[in-house]
Image 1: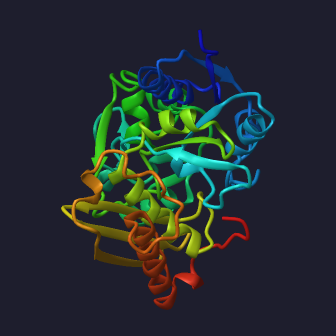
Image 2: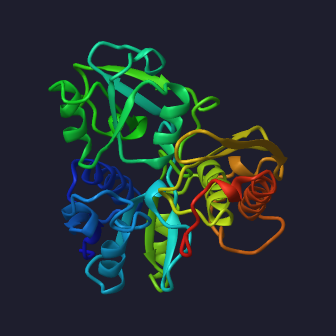
Length: 332
């Protein structure tokens, strides 16, 4: 019997739910058992704000150390929390089909974010969401928020907060967590979300056996891989970390890729946005397994073309003034 594959995961309920989903899919694709290996990161034990403890990649660092040290065979990350610079020795083996990319407002009574009265307290740990909240309703107070999805939702249920902003994908993967509360879904056109939001990344060592890499590649969704390549290129080119006040969402429509990106001032007082649609090669995103070879610098590869389009969008944002309002990091 083949040795079980070891999937490294954070201990949070959401991380375990995401990892379990991938484990089941990988087991079905490879015919091998997949076991979860719990790993504790600095981001899990620190109660400080994400900005104070480094923000970018705080949840990924310890996991990647475990993978490089052969404590596990693969990792599953929330792609929106993953730095855009790929570390030596590791590759993204697959990006499965994306879950809902939207944000949702969680309240007790269903009052829309726009209509929350003065003095209402809204919780979030995301600078991007802080800026968007200020733009949507400058009467409310925003409170920095850490903790897992359950604890954030509980603070609304208990009346400590009037609302929290969460990713729709996380609530879907933790079905029932906010069943007794009200959800307001925020449209991506007016409220674009973080690059990679709703998507997962399956990371492996670059020297992994060919049969293992092939099994991982079966989990890849070409349309998602193309879209997030564009989104993450926006973030990388802006030199903004994954917790910066930057939103980028890309989606395929036929053989065209539409990219919507916005950079915000931290206080929401300014925004610089751009929409762009670029053509990709006909039919590519409908070919099973076409996400493979995503790192090849090939002009005919739509993943590379999507990344270049994202880079171009970011450069145009910089030309329009994004450089003046977005905090920049040396290691995005």
